[in-house]
Image 1 (cartoon, rainbow, N blue to C red):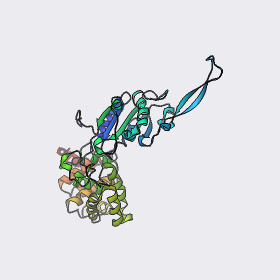
Image 2 (cartoon, helix red, strand yellow):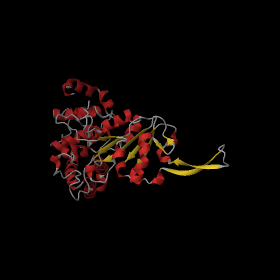
Image 3 (cartoon, helix red, strand yellow):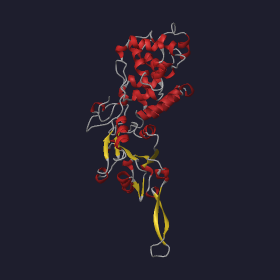
Image 4 (cartoon, one colour):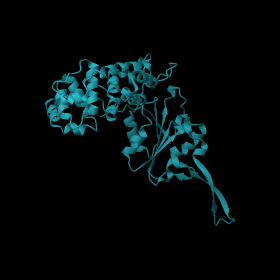
Length: 372
């Protein structure tokens, strides 16, 4: 079980849990570094709460006219003939009309215009815009960057007093030396989301890819965002690593020159050059078809990086039909690599069911249960 560091920071999973638990009564604003996955919380909440409607609001694009438009209505029986009053119809983007409780995400609220923030105060505190309230049980939450990021995020004291502010820590790589993967980490997320094996292996080899600039020891880290370092255009974040994965998967089409150029513009030149060395290793590995066809004789990878990539590649490719053959090949690896595969695949919701129903894997796990 993960541990909450009270008064300090929450993980992304803890942020989600907090919103799902008290978000219908308390508007929670999560502050965190750029690209760590704050905006993705809406989609995970939508899966968690399928009976809710979702409304994504990019606060940087809002103007006052985007909240509601005026219309007139005739009021009868007031003593005046055809008395007209002005009312306001809320914008459909807030999903007031859904008839279901709504999860409203106010993304980048710290960058909104001051007048927009003022209008949002009633939405955050009372769940209403003008006279129209969100359906009962609706949730409102927001995200913003840290003030120290230097990207213009700010909320005034009177606004902060209406909500609960929490700091979200940057996900760490999460790979243990014993083959374990922390549950609440980028590594666990990557295995769940089909990230390219060489990118996963790269983060395992260089965990400093996901270090935080708020750690004084990372002052000279060339991979990460640092507001005090001028000219840091592209840098490594969980968000940019996902984009790098899409590029890496098309490397055979793009070619090495285009791939490295695109990666440099996505995760920075230092990280791109480090990943380039992993591509060279991948090109020398036995193909999946060869491994499955002859698992007893196919050559094992020789160096650490090659073994790491082969294991993560297997996690993404293995299926019910190939599992037996893969287990034969796997058990020729040193035990630490067998452990990495086993501990990783049981954390994958897509592959764990295949693993635990495979007789060879169950036999291996029973024999080596001390590893779990």
